[in-house]
Length: 477
Image (cartoon, rainbow, N blue to C red; front, side, top):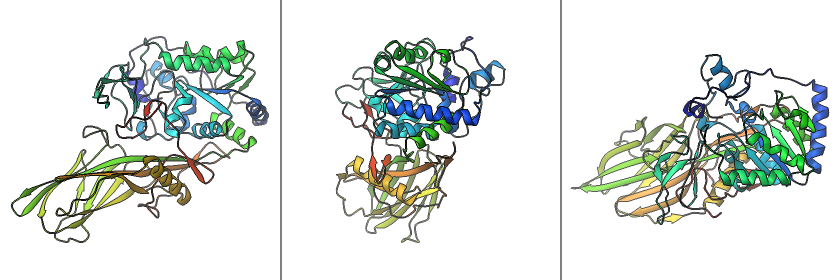
């Protein structure tokens, strides 16, 4: 869960039972239960997974009611705990990525999540098979046409309030709203109806990392029992629903799921993150010189942050007369005057922030003010898929490729996709392995994006969602 989300919530005295002791089943018993759970999942015809904050703790995001949870520490007067990474750079856990593979294998039919951390979508899980009951800290929605916008930065508000942005549909233009519920907000009807429908159809609901205390969400898994289904719970603490479950495992969720994946002979795919950056070069004539301005921004506009970039080193390798510069403040901008008649090559070294698995990536730009380049738009899905496949093959991040370029007589704009993170998961334990950083691009800068199976890459198709880091272009439902 988001710590920013916890701080933005209105005050509430009764947040349920907190600080309950953690329970660890003996190792031999855990292994027996893992085998039992694997058999249950393999036999299931309609598996639904119900997730809580406990599946994100290994991603560095504290839970709410555990011994060091947000509500537990607040009740003790200790304030909100620190996250190990900036929220926007949190990496999906082993469990998140395992669920992606289970869906691809046809075993998992639907996920119901109480989390607002966006890690299910960030992992590549299909939006159409996900119900986010409490919203998403990185998602905005148009109240008129219902188009969703998934951002690479945390939305400023919670409580279904207006945000500073508007719907990009020319026929709409309504003010967007955040999607995260405050205490008194009702569950979104569409998300709730989808969740209930799948719980009623489920022959097995697997609850992962949830205390099952928050109503009405906590009662949904029991709907499967009324129709002859079963409930299994994996959690470190006792829950109010344990007595009605067919199987309860007290253990770390990642360890249990890793064991299940091994029993099912399924791999856990790596997490590969691709971020987008927009480069704009505008120029105007001034006697015999050209005054130009370079801007490096988010595709969401000048005011939107680029959270994955710490600084940018701009150099001109073929022009010793042009001094290099380091841009440290956002929005990144550089102004210069140069001769109209002399072209130059500009090298931008993007230095990444904490949470990225490589230090930097470089983008080269040939500038000739006497020649106007052609505009083009490449297949974004294909390019990002190839980039991700290259990152997985090379086991490192940093690859980048241009997605589109738009040129006019006085401006040139380009959008680049960059692989900023790759994380692999060890089936033997609950820890993730980040590849050793090589500093710059690790090999070819071939095109790429999100989730792979074997040697082929697969992208999750969104539901009515302007997907992660996409420019404002509508995607089909």
